Length: 175
Image 1: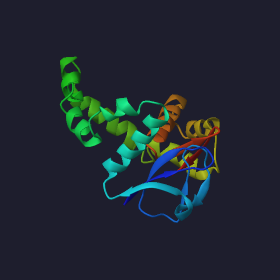
Image 2: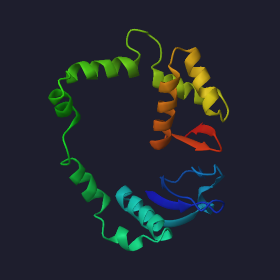
Image 3: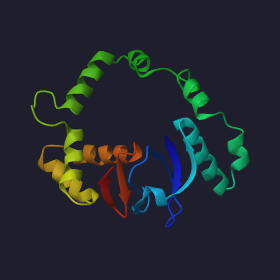
Image 4: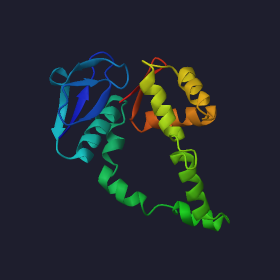
């Protein structure tokens, strides 16, 4: 089950999967009992929940008519596979061995040869070890463990965009 819920403090909208006891607003960090959250729609289809949320955000910004002309998320997902060329084809056409790129990526993210945690795992460990750390604390923690500061910052940004970490007021929390 998926529900589009809202925050009474900052008016943020997000999709919650299942029926957790509490939910935390990804924007302002307010934690509240799930049952007390305003549920705008409840559905078994995650695409439907995403579309309702997107429609509500578009309407808020005065773009409801433009949003209505777009294809559904499912149709857009299907079409994206056909758009452009895949990474392997691009790399090969550029004269880069895609197998070598894959191997290098595996070594970088899985910590091959070091026997220790990957760089990404180190950034996640910094989030777990500190209570609501800021970017500088996370970068310092990671740098002490051999992770380049630029990588730590990029990984943190990607984790926020992927919804695995929330950022509010410069403080980060794993979700």
